[in-house]
Image 1 (spheres, one colour):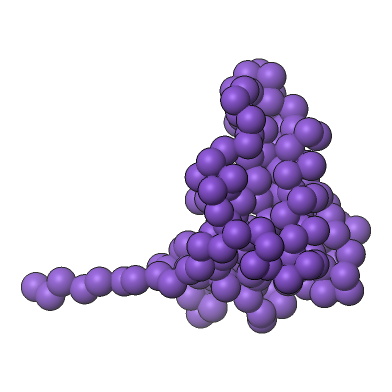
Image 2 (tube, helix red, strand yellow):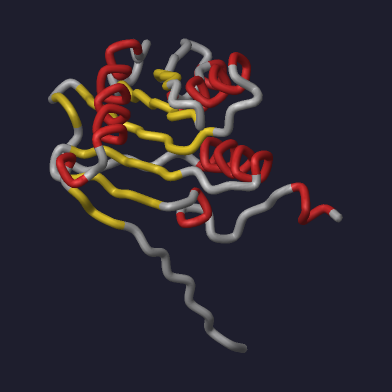
Length: 159
């Protein structure tokens, strides 16, 4: 038996340490929390995708009394981007969340299903998606979803 370790690298930055375009993207994710329909959890998540051409597409979580029928903010943004701009790779994804007390201090990370969707975008366009996870105490910056999903599964694994 051999014990192995996997490590990930990421940055913790303040908003003013990001380039202006990424500062604006984070703000769009924060603003998108206002578009959330979170009647049941009161947990409002917003996401913003920066496309290669500079366009930004936002998304917000949408809940439903039949819980599996809802959808996360990340997937609403990604699917809207892909439906409306299928020729444009997503270069950066920003995510923010708030609850009844306001914006969260610590960043939240995408759920497993959202991580897999972002991985598929990376695989589809053969390029990493930069991930910005916002919290009032700082922003986590990941250069690829593979940092959050180190043992990933893509189409190539099936061949």
